[in-house]
Length: 183
Image 1 (cartoon, rainbow, N blue to C red):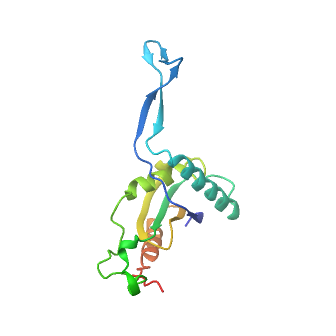
Image 2: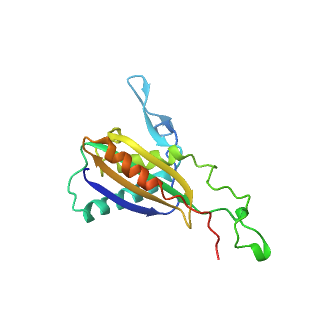
Image 3: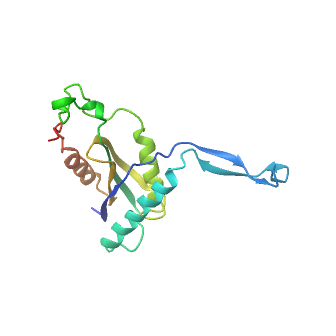
């Protein structure tokens, strides 16, 4: 098994959705060069820039703590576990206000989309932990309920033997959570 780092970023994750091209204006008119309108690409989600900076900061800290001075250059295994608090509607009322309803779903199946959450983290790690997110050859993604918003990140360089990666994935996923009762 190659080098590995682990860190947690607390806070509400932002999604990396679509990007769109918008014209660049000068004096109220679009800038035109060689007969074409000059554009710039922006993210549809304005919160994603700050989120990606936060992820990159904690990734750089994790690299420093692990005494890793260069980016991962080989194949990458990436594990991302996004957690979010349960909505109040999952709990009872009155004297049962702290009890989880039996009808409450065990997993978050509402937006945001798991792949869009992962895309933002993958992009944030590019140029910090690894050169390009194309190096990711195996990924384990999960959304779950927890006490607050956060993402738990594990990045591992895989050297040759894929079975080690599978063992890590199975061991990490064996932590089946019981439905919590808050007291």
